[in-house]
Image 1 (cartoon, rainbow, N blue to C red):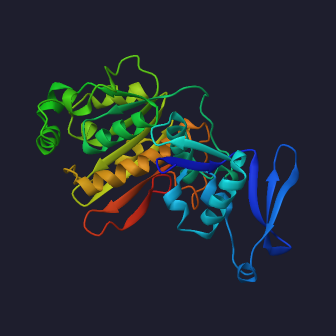
Image 2 (image 1 turned 180 degrees about the vertical axis):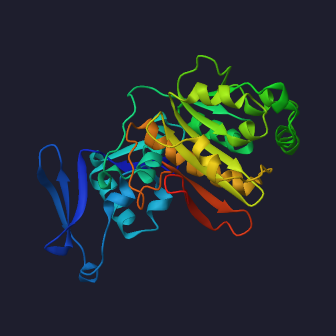
Image 3 (image 1 turned 180 degrees about the horizontal axis):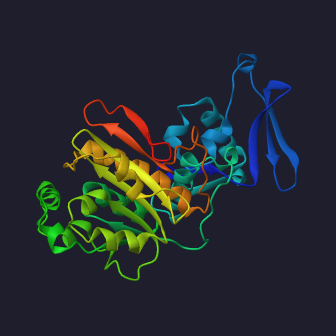
Length: 316
């Protein structure tokens, strides 16, 4: 079992008896009944045990030994193995569980109210702009089984220092080699999906800005950029239902600059979280909780990484 992982089956729940914390009960959720009880010592009377957090997703047996809940689970595995799923480290079930964990830890829809829902169905995420941010997104989104396309760079973009810097830093001879075979290269015309676009393309005229903005006007789009003083994520544009890039630039006149790797990692992480909401058809907004840049953009100081929200609707 040393090369296996374990999780509690979805049909069962383990929890402390709310009336007596020294007693642990196992519930059969389908049958809606208690199927097992066992008592702990008096030293556990004031201990808050959270079996759900420890056992709902696959975990290695070695990791289980580091918690009280894990040690109890290992005893149950010996006496009641039917309560658990076992899988190897290369099991498809383990990857699927990782993906569920990824979304579950990033989205808390139960605390939100709905403001927008996109069309259901499989979504394609279209990355427009060759950058460390889009490279990271292409790899992580592809690893989660999402459909990813990348717009072929224009001649001006291929000659831009940002693309050349990226190739140099990664020791690649071409963007096609750098991004690998798991992504699809496309031209922007007639593409349908969720656009993730680097503002640098628009601000340095590396592409036809008016044409590009017209292309994505009827879609969902996420903008990001790097400037001499700060780097940004947003706005998240919901078709014609929210403020977009044009309104953003009216109040943000920053000069484009090359991003650093730490800046790009923050950008890609925030963008990926936004895309989770879109992918799961739970695009919801609660400003102080969800932190989605609808009608706004997140801005981070280049030196301190202190952040603020650029309020497009209110003009800062």
